Image 1 (spheres, rainbow, N blue to C red):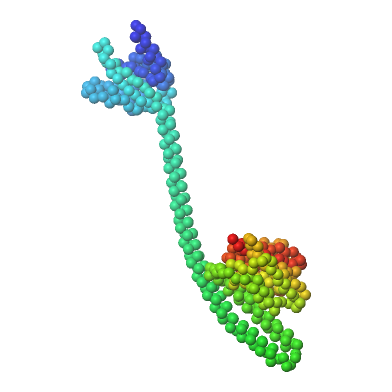
Image 2: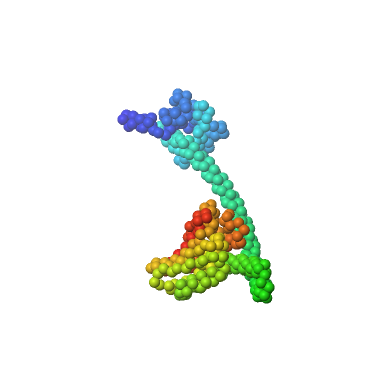
Length: 395
């Protein structure tokens, strides 16, 4: 009795459903878990054919399954287990795993079905399938998007390559043109300059101030054109990467005195260039030609943008760390709004008016100084003058 009670307690409290049927398919017992799964009370199931818990077409063929097993002994479910579909009282269906065992009891066969609900598992599997399908769609969309992006990048790359090739060709054409123009223009300009000098010499006996005035204008115009050509040629060489600093040791005071003498000749009436050197040492290791070009550009600007009867300060200094070059004038100054663009190529301040220039000089100065590891700084105020400082580290 105790064993029977224990067995009944186990069956009644089992998590999975347990149903027993006879060899004709009629339900003999059903535990609470099975009742809950199918939505029936025990009395609604016991005594009825087990097919009531099956949807079509298994319902119609269930008795045939049992008969075939009785005749042939060929089991489709018994002792094997498989996934099947159950039919609830409310006509809804649900998946479960069915295991069937056969027991010989009191000279007859009893079949016991063990029912494990798969609803939660199947729902999880369905969600995973939906999620996987969604991921596949996303991957496919992303793949198409990436393929489109790759094609777009390829086209852009081809366009950029073509543009770079055209730009390279244009750069080469510009370089050839600038070089040709520079050399071709220099010859006639030299001829004009020489002819003006000869005319000035031949006209001395006439003592005519108008002749001297116009000859001076010719020489000035030739000088401006020569400076423009020099600026364009310097810029072209810089852009083409043809300019490199050739460092050598030289006396900066001697170079500065030569530059001062040269520039004083082209200074305006009563303009004075005052040179001063600070420091006991005068030897530096820089590119003499690039440095001379920088200083001439700065002093030329000081001459252009300062009036007559003014002086221009030109100082050099060598201390333990740096070589410093300073050029200061008392000219028109640079508007504050223009100062941030001052070293850009072809930029000219708004207050330059009719004063000739290409807007390349300071750009060239900054780039030449950079080639020598130098730094250009300035300070300026309207009608108060401008001071440029180039600093070269010595270590």
